[in-house]
Amino acid sequence: MAQVPETQQKIKFYQTGTLTVGNRLLDEEHRSVQGTMDRSNSLDSGHRACQGCGEALGARIAIDVAMRATDNQLIAANATGCLEVFTTPYPETAWSMPWIHSLFGNAAAVASGIAAAMKVKGREEVRVIAQGGDGGTTDIGFGCLSGIFDRNDDVLYICYNNQAYMNTGVQRSSATPGAARTATTMPVGKEPGNAFSTGKSVPLIAMAHNIPYVATASVYDLHDLEHKVDKAMQFRGARYVEIFVPCPLGWGSKPGDTVKLARLAVECGLYPLFEAEEGELTGATRIRRKVPVDEYLKLQRRFAHVFKPANVHQLEQLQAIADRNIRRFDLLSREDEEA
Image 1 (cartoon, rainbow, N blue to C red):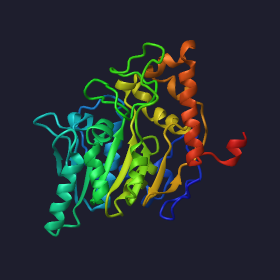
Image 2 (spheres, one colour):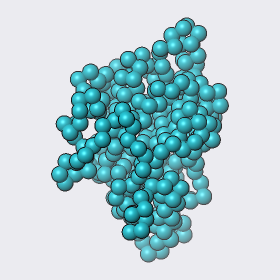
Image 3 (cartoon, rainbow, N blue to C red):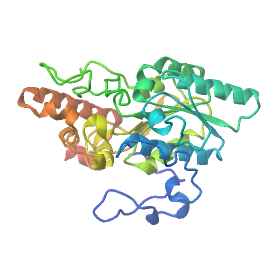
Image 4 (cartoon, helix red, strand yellow):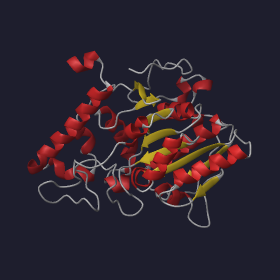
């Protein structure tokens, strides 16, 4: 299990009957950014996200942490996508920070240019982030993203991964899991939903570039998310943080289940949480209570077809993927493995 950094307080007990940790149980200096009066509220009220939007929650936390880490000296470049659309309906904006939107595929390149300009101007205290969904990151913007990794530009790229192109009608992206129903991978035929032979893992690709810092996070564990974004801002050079953000609209789930789904995805092994530095894995979050993948899948209409008798092999494939992740990242304690 990843060790608790000395800068973090060990949490000794939980609220009765829940899996959450209240700020009141933590020393004031260790409380989350949203539990402090000096938060920047960089993504403020007035946006038009759907009820239960995981991306809105993830962005609010991540950007406020980055602002705190840089003493509010931060500029954001945003790819086209849900986050850009629901926060900036012309002529309004929910952003209270320097923020720019260009095209679907070039947020990383725009951020790289901003970082270069700040360096030329001698304003190296001004830090830069780029952010986008999985479509603008793993597909359309992948070339520009690889470019900042290759050049080791001083940019933190944050990907909000909801596993499809939600803004344009829930089309498949290269982050869409096998068997998932989307508008372009319908649940028909002998292999309904998305093919298992497609897709890519950008966190692992980022590690292959040997950049200073790579991490995966989830909106179910906001303290871990905050820690990783804060840690990313302590590095110079290219950094990549991917945040798992369930989408009720695209997934066919209840708005009130967003955080629960984010937790189950981690606890079944389909979305491992880990960190890496200079291409080497430095830690992974152990699963506290391992659950079968069907506990996660049954809450989403996009996977309804895998529970039909004719498609049980797809359910088995998804379980195999989860089990492989658990072995690869050593996500279980020995006691859990023996059980």
